[in-house]
Image (cartoon, rainbow, N blue to C red; front, side, top):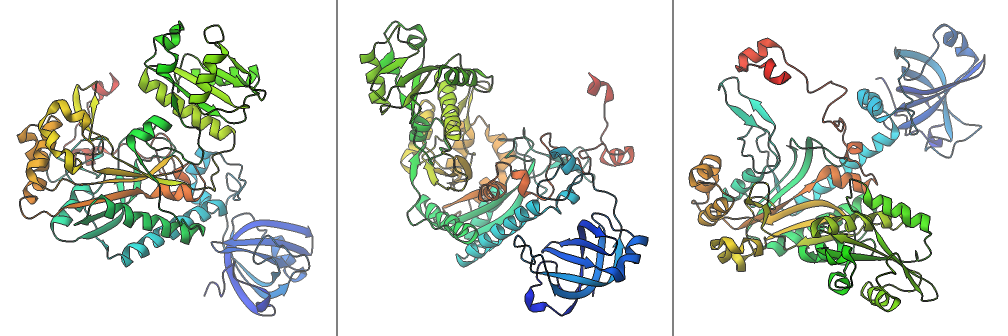
Length: 588
């Protein structure tokens, strides 16, 4: 046996016992020639080793370095100088025998929580970064969430069923990753963006409660909360309506929070329509940890001779509590913030509501105190508050104010990462109009059913913008962590949806004939949801980046810098795949 115990389990109860440990050297501290202390680390913790005078000659001949792999045997003894910061801090091992199982080069960064390695360096040596306690704790949390979800779904009768990774490309959203087929020249598989059609087919097959914690792949631009390959908690149920899905998976989220964070939600999650989310928060994933709702001032401020307001499609405001004494310097800094290219506004209008009830604005030339009082009333502002106003084209202005609201919440400490406020957003539009493509596209995906009472509107193209989807998202602290819908399960309605999206019958049959055919053999009503597993873990762990909770993530360019992937392949492989690279075109 390499070890009798791990580096995290010895306590005072084992004092006097002979034990064998194995692990990595965290630190080496030589106090004087006769005494050396080593912190030995494994996945389970750290134990201090004491090398006394009897071992000094050995260490002189074979000095230890950081990250050496050791096996030591010794006696558990009580420490004279105890360390209350670690569970093993009351004991140490007086070493009687040492084996260096493997020496190590000096690591390119320190293997500790406060490391001196930057992101790219740590990603290049990810196998070293994974030794750090901070990363280990993230992966442990991920495993616990995985286990909690599986245990819950098992109690509800769900069956874990695997679906294929090599499928047919049906581009209807993000770009597919494609895989050439050697045995079928000039033909390609695609990696699944989700198991959507397979889980629907499983419902047709009678497996009425399916789930998978499954890898998915999307060739899209990356952000901190996106990766080209990611993990979903993918679920589907048949003989259900929207209420069944919401209740069941609300229970799952509550179960996970209770097990992982020790938090209980005693009240049902609030629900908000898409229209209300856009009106009051400016986006469809509102952060409800704080108020500061958007207020539409358009009708109130137009026609007063102020060109910026008179020409705007939307004038929208927020009231920021307790900030009425902001200085001109602070307000100028906020103005610069909204003018950044990422926000894209031309300027910011403000009203300072003094504690004495006075109102002072950046547009006093056009609006007297009486008019400003009306603004304050509409914005529900009180003395001591600051009113911030943006004006311009509707879509851009609403989005900009949503971002400004979140920024003010951040600056005022209202977005506490240890406070969790989930909600359901429901009643999404079924379609949205893509101006560049001059056609309607599915807001969710083409298998989402309209609200039952609005199915008749599918026959009138002029009514597409009015149709609500039988779809729902679950949002946590301003981040979408899951989304789903009740699906179409009748062939004729599915064909209408494909036609609405501009597909010819031939194209629909080519891409989805297998699904349309299945609907003719007794497809039951069904619906489901998929949770972003990486994203859920990052929120539970208090991080904004999902990369911290993935063992081997890609960087912001979609590269694995440890493997140096993606990379070219040799000519023999290209020949087998019958792929010819036209270098001249690539250069151009």
